[in-house]
Image (cartoon, rainbow, N blue to C red; front, side, top):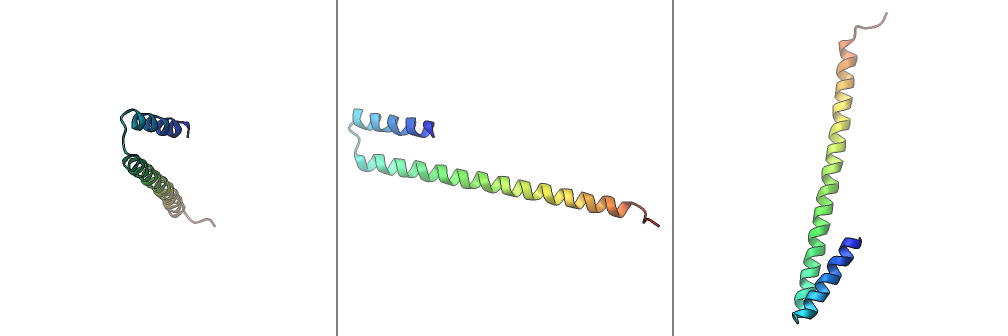
Length: 73
């Protein structure tokens, strides 16, 4: 969060130093935030898929071990 605040402050300072139009700055800021949100959604999706795959592998290996054991009398 502090990194994002530093980035915003840097952008504002650059925009003021070079007399950049506010529309361009706003467009760049919105685009950057959208990119960060997309990256976060993809990262969360990868973690969810990875977790589900691990659970599936554990279940399949547990079933395979149960089927390998001889039946109890």
